[in-house]
Image (cartoon, rainbow, N blue to C red; front, side):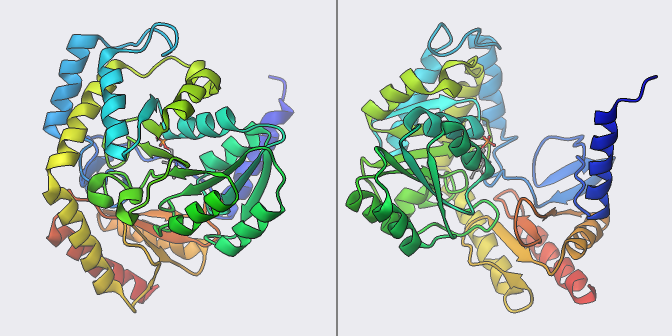
Length: 386
Ligand SMILES: *Cc1c(COP(=O)(O)O)cnc(C)c1O
């Protein structure tokens, strides 16, 4: 066999990653998603899924997906613009728009694609985007793909954002920010950002992947903060708290009509299976009515923070994302492994995903009080010994 030099290069880079404790592998789940999952024949307490409300395996939502498949089939067969836009999806868009307090909405197959769609659909050469440095990777990719002038400001630094806006002579200006930062769990200063959008005639694009379903009685971060404006374009993902899949963009009708006409990640892709929309209707029913789930989650968050306060480095998060900052990558990986060996699945998040290594604990409504207490107990024991 002739040696292929590309493969030798790839293998060498992977070896470097291994040496730096940065090599990534996947664990295979042998059960459905939930607070308790099976991996390699062992039951684990799962503290790393984004299934914040415990809906990924909710019986009513599973039943709605099954009924949806029976009613609408499995494949959508075409893109939304050609022949793949179904009544169950049209109704879902109207419901999701109303839930966000916006006139119109569209759904996409993933949040990653929704971010590509909004940013590349709205801005291009001659325009400028203004982005928090801690934004999600999909937003960074979206900006690069758009060819707009990219201006990044330090995390939540509103004064720096204002300087960038004041200095810009771009045709269109789009401020881009995570509402809840995915690796830190803190909330962006959205009220000040909206004021700047108004002062400098910019639009404000908000990625609420981690606020939807959790904050603002489930309506998300804008409702939590009491913010509304036609200048805001809102995006939430439906594979996290909603427990299904996909994402939606809600905005003024003209913005949605424009995206339907310009956003390539919307136009040139096969629509998601309509059964996904059927499942999402059931998920929204639960999010709207089952308030106890959110209360349980917020009780777990309060308990976790009270129990660990002063005993390890927490970040200022009132969301389900509760990182514990650690001194180095090796410690983060070793603690995550020790927890795993003890039956607790907690992800170690490392550079380049984040600048500072950490455990990223995710609490969900599906956990019991005893399970959260057990996690705190073992964390304190392991952190003390490390
Ligand atoms: C998860 C996430 C996305 C991507 O959404 P998917 O539906 O998983 O593709 C986008 N933005 C943020 C902030 C996220 O956390």
